[in-house]
Image 1 (cartoon, one colour):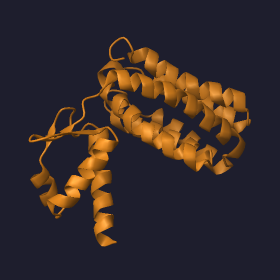
Image 2 (cartoon, helix red, strand yellow):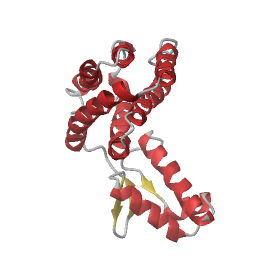
Image 3 (spheres, rainbow, N blue to C red):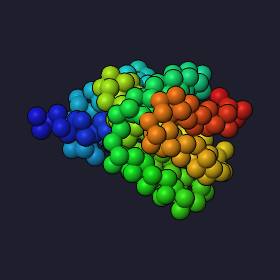
Image 4 (spheres, rainbow, N blue to C red):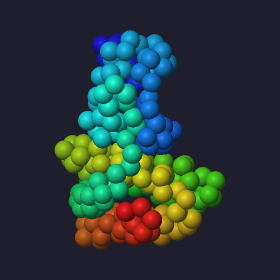
Length: 212
């Protein structure tokens, strides 16, 4: 059990580094260095590399090593198309099932966002946005939907961070997230669905000329 916990911890740490671009697209990860960092043999490192490969975050190249997957913009386009529909559905469910306490947590996120500077705090803004979505996804109370959306978010969050040079307006968040909250507060499932999709549409529209 202890070894499994260490393997799981290594997986989560490496996944986070890839998503948050601490490991840049195309970077080669040294198996020996990773094993040394986590005080593990190379065998569990290879297993974790394989997990990351299965999640399209690493490419395993024979006789070369493990390379952080480049951002595939055609794949990202398809990921956003699916995410848009499933986020809308999750928000519809959340409109019926979310607790008042969770709505207050969403409101607190928006209040924190108002204090951030888009240039200096971009990474924190994306992290807050991700927490916002996680609250809604979990509030859908649909385990299958949660699993699928978390898998998609590994990729959509990565491109949010990659797109930093093209995002200069905090309004991208402050003009859309409060509408989601308002729909949840009045338990309006149609309004919630629409507001969730608009949030994604605004971002995709903003970057599609440069990236997608």
